Image (cartoon, rainbow, N blue to C red; front, side, top):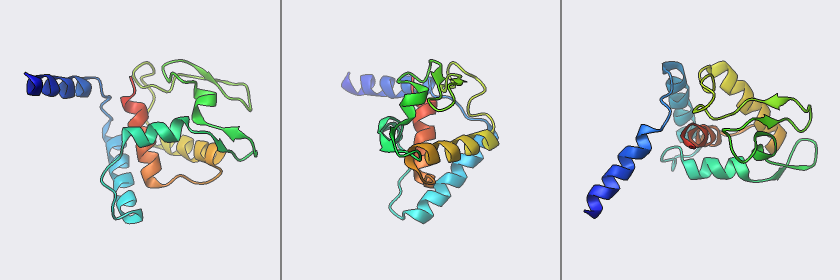
Length: 139
């Protein structure tokens, strides 16, 4: 009975995962190859690491503490607000915003920009893949 429950939970979790389009799947594969080159011990992208990257505060490019949740909110299903420009940010979750994570060009741009804003540096391939993995799987 316990095995059946575990199998059902695993199957249920995959039902709700967002399936990336072909170009995004290719981009994630490229990130995976880059991550393996950067870190030979790399074993795959990780939801929990992505979550930590997303919620942890760092001294950002403007010299003040910032995290992704400050602009995107604790619930990526809700709208956020850019703390520097005061512009509304549409929900980050592809479960409620179907255009999210459909264009590689946009994903690269926002990862580059947000890592610079929050971490004051370029994100590694592993960090980028972990964050995307977190966001596309967060319910």
